[in-house]
Each structure stands twice: as C-alpha cells, then as structure tokens.
Amino acid sequence: MVGQAEFSKYCLTNQKPSFILWYEMEMKMSKIAISLNATILEEIEQQRKAYGESRSAFFRRVLQCFFEFSKKQKESSEVTAYVEGYKKRPETPEEIEVVHRLGRSA
Image (cartoon, rainbow, N blue to C red; front, side, top):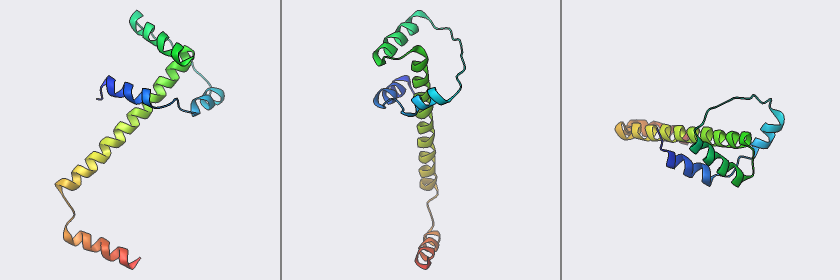
C-alpha cells in the first residue's frame, strides 16, 4: 500500500484532468452520502475553496486522481516484477540467438 504523502504529491503535481468537465456534462450522476469528522471536513472545505469548486467536484477530482494514481502504481509494480523476473532468469544465449535470427529474416 502506498503512503498518503506519495498520493498527495502525485495529486498535487498533476493538473485537474480535462475530461472531468465532459464527464460532468455527459454522464448521469448518482448521489451518495458519507460521514466525515470535523477535521476532515474542514480540510476538504479549504481545498475545494482553493480550487474554486463544489464539494461534488472536489470529490470527483480527488477520486479520479486516486484511480489514476492507483493504476500507475499497479503498472509500475508490474514492470518491476517483469524486470525482476528477467534478473532471476535471464535469457539464455540460445534464446537471444533465435530472436536475432528472426529479426534478420523479417
């Protein structure tokens, strides 16, 4: 699991996704209710006012950022696993030669 600081840094350094406006205009919206403590609500209010957005827009932006961040983290861990796999079991000289022959014949 990634830390809050890493997620916050990602979201604060990435601009608001341009497709949210399209999403807000084209997609049917559903309403939800959540319970928050006063401290979290105060932080939300400060952040959303800084961006000049409604609570709904704030949550859409933050959640979209979270989903993008999670996807990038997953992709990054998959690439790391792929590289680690080759470090544990590198290609044999025979496998490399096959690839070279196939490349020359193409």
